Length: 160
Figure 1 (cartoon, rainbow, N blue to C red):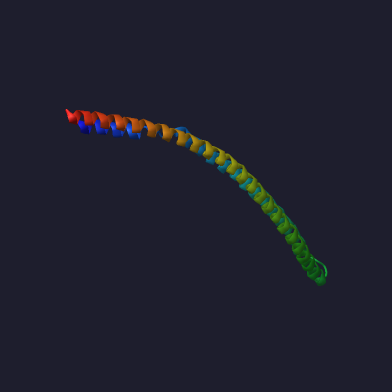
Figure 2 (cartoon, rainbow, N blue to C red):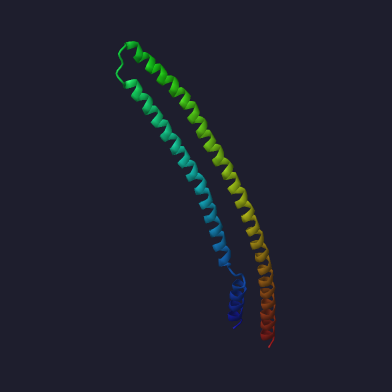
């Protein structure tokens, strides 16, 4: 009989530590929002990089069409190749600088998103810890009271 009382007490004790499903859902939502914000940053950077690549390719193809055009004098071929090479070097420099700006912007936006997420998560974690501490203290007190009552009952029962 005392065994049944102790099983009930233990079940009640562990049942006194509730799992907060809402905090898990909030945590999932927070992480999903962070992923969404980060995806926006990355996709925006990828789109700008694709635009730069497209412009660079179009410029290179336009220059190649000038090089491949028929010329009257053989020296014009050498001049068109030289012009194409010079233009290509200038364009490469410009486009690499544009890629650098895209990367710099993406990095700055990433830092902003991560700082905001850190503040949000810190506030959520603090609130969750305060609630968990309060709930654990209440559950511990309740379980202690139940164990004490069961022990007294068992002692009284065994004394008879």
